[in-house]
Image (cartoon, rainbow, N blue to C red; front, side, top):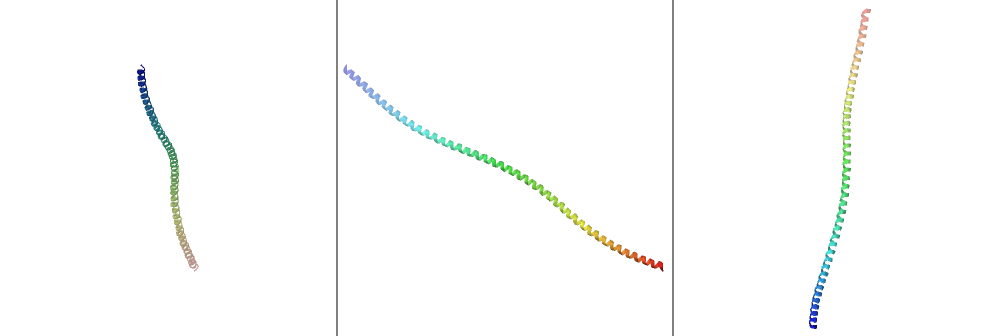
Length: 155
């Protein structure tokens, strides 16, 4: 029985050695697997960090773009206000221009009226001078006629 016990013990020892060998192999596979998992996890962490950095960069870019858009909208609004103001100034200047043109026409008409009036005064003065000359001539002739008449009546 000792032989049988020895054989059984040898069989158990062989089975245990085989089991131990399988266990070591399993532990080695598990260590390799854990190592691969750790590498993959580290790679995933690096990728996640890169994505976070990219996301942060994109969020900063979006913030900058929003600020730029706000500034551009403000510039557009200021430009619109300036354009409206310029249009009002242009409208006022056009109105002033029309008024100046009307005044110039009125001024031209006034100058023409003054020139016509001056001409009329010159003509009136000429007529007056001619009339005074004629009156003087008629007075002289009247006096001559009266003198002639007196001579005829006294003779």
